[in-house]
Image 1 (tube, rainbow, N blue to C red):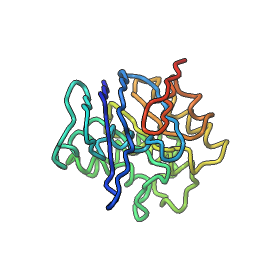
Image 2 (image 1 turned 30 degrees about the vertical axis):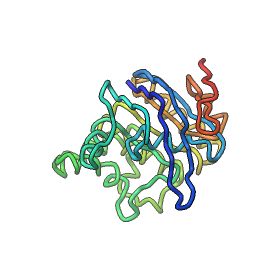
Image 3 (image 1 turned 45 degrees about the vertical axis):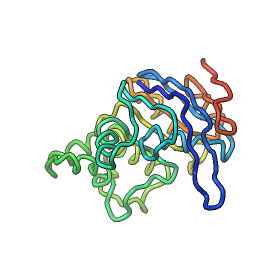
Image 4 (image 1 turned 90 degrees about the vertical axis):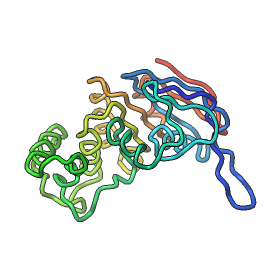
Length: 224
């Protein structure tokens, strides 16, 4: 499903440059449950952004379902993201002036699905997350765990093939973290390829493989 060959990424810092990824080789098969760990500045979030077609790479090859992902226009990149990839972030990234139902339904708006139909579908996904009764609450009326469940529902409503989660438990307490990993584990058990960036060992231990990144290179991969 995902194949990376010698992926390099350098950021121009003006008078200097920062070589973040220094030759990443990686293969992730359909249905895998993977975490990416590394110290701050190791390149793990940059790697996730490249996988999510949110950032370009300078050298190497990235194949997604055997399609070379390189030098795409923003429109082409958006099509791939909308069709194949769901995103979950530490900060939830909910729209503050929209309620839970509207936040979850938003990806379907961009697929030109009618308001009535997308709200029906969004309610089904909120129900899956145990949040039916919170459908008309605003983000500022919900706990961190509830907001992350809304974010996950929004991420999967388009039925992506891959879920990318960047520190999804970083803003949650330990009890809610366990609950959130149960949600992500269940999604993976139903066939969703899931990739999590985390600095928490307890979170990584819930996945089936742990990719350790150090100084822009894969140090080792733990498989369970």
